[in-house]
Length: 185
Image (cartoon, rainbow, N blue to C red; front, side, top):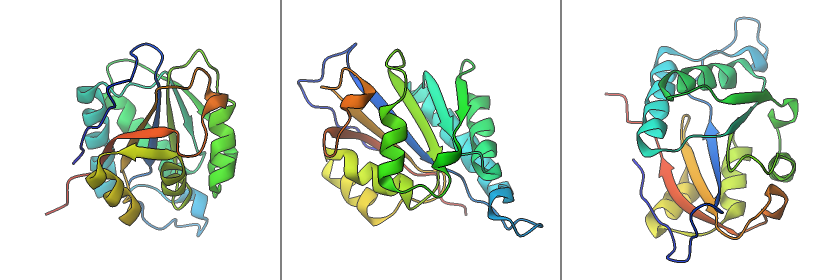
């Protein structure tokens, strides 16, 4: 599961937190369109699990920005079931098949009134963004993040020096947690 790492100079109340969630396991779409792929039973369970972890750990977003693909929408719906309260959600078409720079642009324009932002998207973009933004963190978590970002994984990155989302830059984040779903037995 996850590990925690926060620097001693992290200031409560001014820390921006970015939650990067890859959609859960999905099957093939009957139509053949990639955007219409739905979650498998395993994926539905994984998304519920990550939602429960988010609730238990206090990783509660003020805003969720989600790819409009069916599998990301379903992942968010399952996660939301486990959170203690409703979270405003925006569907952003540019997340689908986005590269790292596009994803960072999406983060940079979010309202500064929202301290914790959840981005639900796809690989390789989500993993690439997590790697680009992470400057420090638990060595084990960073190594795991470099190696893989399986479906339903969640990277929790804090930015202690960012007053605005526009201040988020390469290697300025701390990988606080990297959570992967429990293996299916």
